[in-house]
Amino acid sequence: MAVPTEFLLPPYAAEDGEKDYRPYPHMFVGLNGGAQVSFTNYDFGKLITPDAGVQFGAYFNPVIGARVHVGGLWNRGGIKSANDTYDFNTVTGSADLLVNVTNIFREDKDKVFNFILLGGVGLAGAWDNDEFHTLAARAAEDYPFAWEDNRISHNIRLGMQFDFNIAKHFGMNLELAANNRADRINSKTSDRDDWNAQASVGLIFKFGQKKVEKAQEPVKEEPVEQWATRMDTVWYDDITYKEVPEQVSYEENIYYQIRMSEPEPASKVQAIAKFIKEHKNCKVSVTAYADKGTGTPKINMKYSKERAENVVAALVEAGVDKGIITSDYKGDTVQPFAENDKNRVAIVKVTGEGVKKQEVKTKKYRLEETRYRVQ
Image (tube, rainbow, N blue to C red; front, side, top):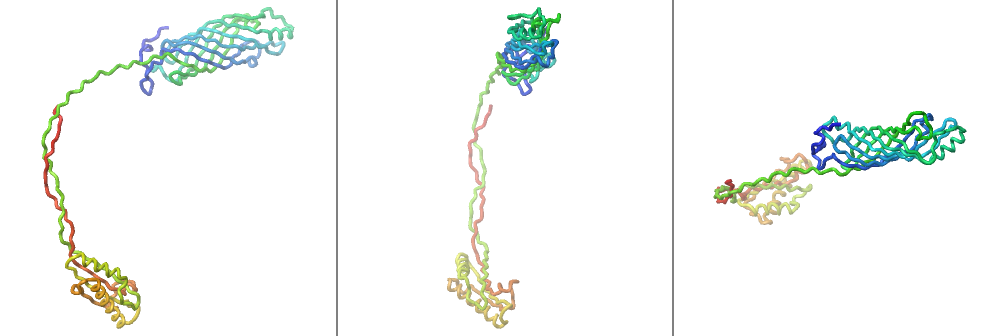
C-alpha cells in the first residue's frame, strides 16, 4: 500500500497549536481485556469466556503500523447430547498489520479519535482438554478427532479498533476481532475451520516520539544608538499668597426662659467677644424681643429692654468696647421666629473686617537639560 508523502512530513499540529513532538512514528505496548466466544453447534451464549491479551508494536507513519499480539487463555465448548459445556485453554499469537483509515482522509494526523483496520496471521495453541474427555464419555459418543495433551493450529485474525488518544503517551481502544482456527481446535469437526470472536478494551502506552526541532530565529543586530543633549526653557507658575481685607459677619441668638433676662449661656457671650477681638473695625448690634404668647405688651417690652441691656453689659464685661455697640428692644411688637418660645431672644449681629489669603501667580522659567536620541 503506497503511503502519501504528506503523511511523512513533520511537524504535526493540533487544533490548539504546534506540538513539541511528532505523534508519528512511535512505538507502543498495551494490555487489553474483554470476552471471547467460539461459534460451534452449541448455544454460543453459554460459551462466552473472559479474554486477556498483551501487544507490542509500532506506527511507522500516520497510516501504517504493525504489532505482535498474544491473548486468550480461556476457552469453552459444548456437547449437545450431554447438554453441558467443557473448558479448555487456548492462547493465540499473531503478527498484525494496522491501517489507520481515519488518517488517510484528513490533513491533521493527531485527532482524538481514529478508526483502524487490522489483520494478521499466527498460531493458536490449546491444552488442558480433560473436561472434554470426561463429558464425551458421559455422552457415550465417539469423537475420533479429540486430542489429548495439546493442539497447535493456524490463526488468521481480522478486526477493527476504535482508538482514542488521551495524551502524548496514553491511549485507549475498543477492539473487535475474529480468529479463524483449525476445525479440531475444540476436539470436534464440522469439515470447516472454526471461528472465534473477541471484544476487548485496551490501554496503550506510546513512546519513542521524536521532538520537533524548531528552527532558530536569526539574531537581529540592534542598531547603535546615538544620543545628544540640549538645554530647554521650561516656564512655570510660581505660587505665593498675600493677605487682603474682607468683610466678615457673625450672628448669635441668645434664647431665654420665660420671665428671664440674664443672657445664658455665658459661652455665647464669650464667643461673640472672641470674634470681635480677632477682627478689626467691628460694629455690634443687639436687638432683644419677648414672645407674644405670654405676658402683656407692657411686661414684654420691659423684659426685652432688660435683655438688651444685660447683653450689652455682659459684652462690655467680656472686654468689648461699649462704643461699638448699639442696642434696641422690640417687646412683642416684632416676632422674628414662627415658633413662639424662640421669640424670647436677643439677636446679636457683628460686622467687621478680616483678612484672607489670596493666591498670586508669577510666571517664571528654568533651564533643563534634555537628552534625546539622534539615531
